[in-house]
Amino acid sequence: MSKVDRRILKTQEALKKAVIELMSEKNFDDITIQDLSDRANVSRGTIYLHYMDKFDLLDKLIEEHIDELRKLCESACQLDFIEATLIFCEYFESHYSFFSLMLASKGAPYFRNRFLDFLIEEFRKEVDINGGKNQGLHEELIVRFVASAYVGVVEWWFMNDKPFPHDVLARQLGTLLERNI
Amino acid sequence: MSKVDRRILKTQEALKKAVIELMSEKNFDDITIQDLSDRANVSRGTIYLHYMDKFDLLDKLIEEHIDELRKLCESACQLDFIEATLIFCEYFESHYSFFSLMLASKGAPYFRNRFLDFLIEEFRKEVDINGGKNQGLHEELIVRFVASAYVGVVEWWFMNDKPFPHDVLARQLGTLLERNI
DNA sequence: GAGTATCTGTTCAGTAATGAACAAATTGCG
DNA sequence: CGCAATTTGTTCATTACTGAACAGATACTC
Image (cartoon, rainbow over all chains, first blue to last red; front, top):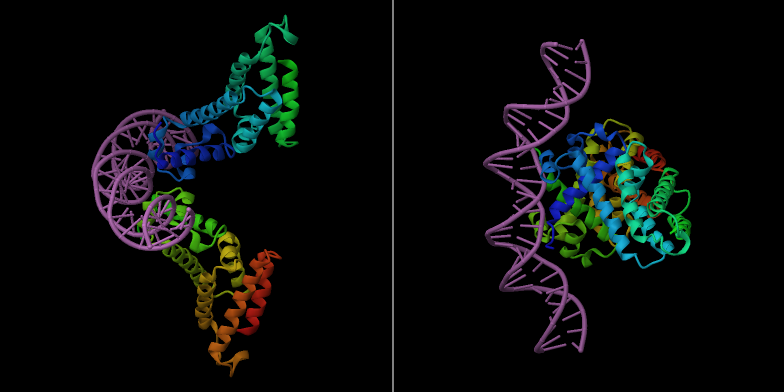
């Protein structure tokens, strides 16, 4: 893959940062292209060179994070759940402004659902009903159970402003995952 | 004055920020154009579109702050010394990374001298030896006295990591200036 | 001191961003 | 409702930035 022009990256970074900032200040529906242009310090027309509209911008922002998480899954697939969960929680931590906004603010169900779908997809690869503790249980039920639990815990962690460090979260969440998959 | 293209401002801002950051990490002489290019995330050639070399960049950065201070002088000329000093100290505070670097780090005499010259120039406008407390004293001596004292106090304040808030600094320094001019 | 690596300053064709202008759509208010 | 103001999405010529290339200058190493 050939290198992307740094001007493109700068513009897109500025716009992603801008939309996160603005979403923490007002409802997404109330954000105008003008707002984004002003906040990102980018010409209004430039936005249309990269995105269809503000929804496209938000979609791409979300999808990029999902992609990053998917890559983490691949690289962490041979680790146990506690170690793997730590890697994920580090990612949550290092993109705090995004995840906190998307999970802690009530007005953003866009991401929550996308995140849940992603987890269902990933846990489906991991679950094994043929042997061990989950013998006799319905596969899809287990997947739903674990994925929902995961989202719920992470959501709670962000909504309560990180009541403890991310490595503690990782260890406890990892333990619970280990027990159920 | 017609508006400056925002791309120009962005590039110059990035470079000014970069040089301040780098100067806090290494000696100015050891900073390369490449370093600046990398840190500012700007093409190397772009630097030469704005500045002759790194010295020119530093000069312009310094001169811009001096110009801002000069503007503050003009707008504060009818205030008393305590109020005027407060305005200046607010400016120091809001550009902490610059002034702290330029005054608190021992290896940067560039700015200290420029700052002193500026203060001499400004105090010369204010001093009055014809009547009042300074009757009979040599004008240039008073100017030097006050300007040196000013630099020394501000330098000390930054070197000691702001031992008290800037408004306290302003009140005390302002009182001393009032007493001498 | 020779050889190598890095840094400098410049050129240049290609690309992205700009801002102004515009008509059409949407919103807000009396 | 009707009018005004704002927002939208697009166009276009102009401008700034890019990255690659280059020769010459410095710095580093054996």
